[in-house]
Length: 481
Image (cartoon, rainbow, N blue to C red; front, side, top):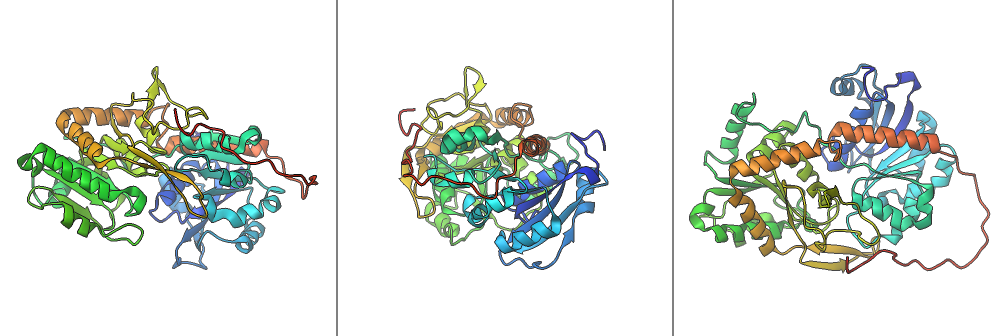
């Protein structure tokens, strides 16, 4: 146990109050938070104020230490779960600070959920630091987030684009912040390739028969995400239909597109009606998987697939792509947000970083990428907005372009696809990518230790001379990069 990365005795560990989704649930936030808690449980003690809509366990408290001990292979974790309807409020946090006496607060999800917390940041940071695992989907740099970023002590950026956005938005203040790149990480014990020699191969074949209803297929495309508008599932289905037309009906009959998502969602659309309108069932085989699947079943699903596709026009990371690569399955993705990281765009062999002069690769500035990735570059980059988020780019790719990329992957053949997928798995597990769950946890330990060491309590108040504020303007390129 003491060979764990920076092991600390339970009594000597810092206690962290984690504000995010209930880590027992299956949202992307909960899944990553759970991996962080498990992977750092030998170094930190955790209290999770676990959010859900109308949480059925509100008012209860759970000790998850034994379950975490089993997962983490230790025997002295301290993990407490306090279920909550919603992410909390000032009154609830004040009570928890008094009862739990944590050494820090750790928040994870969209900043608009934490406006009440940022409003009381001086009260909190006069005693303990606030750490923020954050992400932002797209450019232009959200100047409207500046006060949020300035209200925390540590910014852990999930994507390279987010790190550049944090630094750009904060400007000179970025020098006084700890801002580090901490990409999402997938548990390699749960997601892995299953080849003929693997002990689960027969289980995979049986699951494959169930999913594909006993039909033998030459090519299986897979989608795994929520049915919401920005995921552009209609475009994805339309792209698959065009792909089927491009290769001809007889070959298309030996292909399938499986979508693991809700078929109807008010935040998205009615996908059954979309399929009925666009897809002739005689040769355009589109199937939905709507039931909840276990992690083991999800691993089997990725292993059935020949490629995983994600055409979101805004995407902070795209967790299904990382899961896919961990199973050795190639990815097709729109070039936007954090999905760019997983494609490993490179210049002179070096994995690219973003700067104010090169804030994104969504314009196709760099075309070189990992062999496991098949990018679709946006054909339209338009601005949209709302009152909470006044402006953000919407990176839309053309369904015809996506159909052509699907055809390219199909034409590679099964052996070449598997070879490229294996390269993708090796890369996400590498010291460069650090996209395994353990690498993510080790990253968090290093960054938070730095945050604790550098923390200086804020004064109760400060005097400021009243003067006109300077106008905010974007300082990064908007076009021409």
